[in-house]
Length: 341
View 1 (cartoon, rainbow, N blue to C red):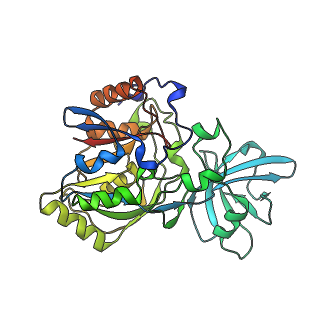
View 2: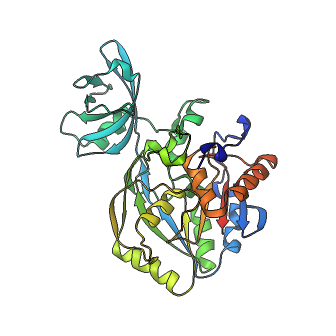
View 3: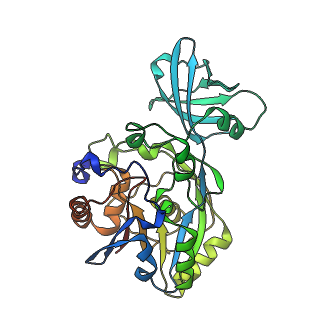
């Protein structure tokens, strides 16, 4: 499909720079079949059915953004995907000043050697020393806010909490599964009281989620792989939800992509551990989910393509136009939508 079909105009003031407080006070646009409702996230329990199951991503964001020096050159690095115990694939700022074999000093006793440059401008970074890389990043790294926020304000102490979900447990993401940022213990308790269950899986979100689609046609776009895991017990419980006629609803596109990667044409979700580079565009037949709770996504992005595959492109273009007219807040710290095809 032509990528231009997924474009739309978003006024810059609609980009949220801070999350709603409290988190579940954010607005919620509900698309239920052909019905559109303007609500709030606290209204979610009444929009679902007893027996439904929400699926959250329990990945934890690491301080994956680094600033360092290679000689007299300033080098920026955003870690993308772990490739080994001390080795990470990273997108590099000022990459023209970096060569294979160069050492980068990130300060605070943290250094890494660059190698394996690829056509996308990324390098592998091998961190020196014996300390766990997680400890090194705590010393030298900072929270990797999305570029559309970082361009407007610096990362600060609030982001260390604001950019983690209440489910964050498995360290390894370099971007938050932002749909789950809206959930609070109070909201989970209300959902449970309404008979709505929840499960967790792990998908370590990579920095590739922010990369624009530069191809003119979706067939020419190459997705970056991300690592995920669904254990056998979780897969079994989710299959039981659907077997009894209830719905599996992904919270966030990361949860959805892993569930779809783990399912077959028989619509059975299987245990999964490994990389996924699934790219979902209109025409895709969903196998594992019956709905999606998600934020509002960038124009021409793979995520807007995904929600268009679920609900239809015309429906999503109309819904986003409605959201813009009615002052919804967009992107990672913005408002949410509940999509029930």
